[in-house]
Amino acid sequence: MDDKLLITYLSILVGLLAVASWFVVRQILRTRRTETTLSRLQNKLNQEKGSAKEHYELGSILLDKRLYSQAISQFQKALKAKDLEGAENVALVYNALGFTYAAQEQYDLAIRQYKEALQQLPEYPTALNNLGFAYEKKQLITQALEAYESALSFEPKNATAKRRAESLRKRLVPSS
Image (cartoon, rainbow, N blue to C red; front, top):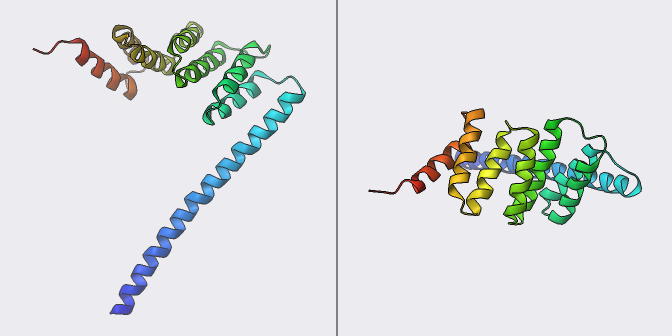
């Protein structure tokens, strides 16, 4: 009886270690892929003029690494690139730029970028959510609520906009 219990515990331990190892290896491979892409893009863009997509991709990696000033530079280069076509792509870059400013708590600059994104693509729920967040951080509750409600008008199942709009409505309605 004791041998069966010991084998069961040992099997569970080996199973848990296998699962943990799988997650560790997966994370190592993901990190390696990101670092390889970062290195390749930096080398290429230091030697020659890159495409808007390459600048955006590098900016996104730098943003993930919290290298904000470098990410801003890459997003700005993406916006200046001659091959950035389509309102959706331009809006995507402006939104990323706004997100980078918001990460540095530069909410006025973030709001400006989100509005630029929305000029390109008025029905962009992510930019509307981000705009609402920036307005909240600046204590502009009415504008934040409007941004979230606008996001809900384009995407009724937007969980973030629903949750934040409900919270803001409660703050605006005085309790009796």
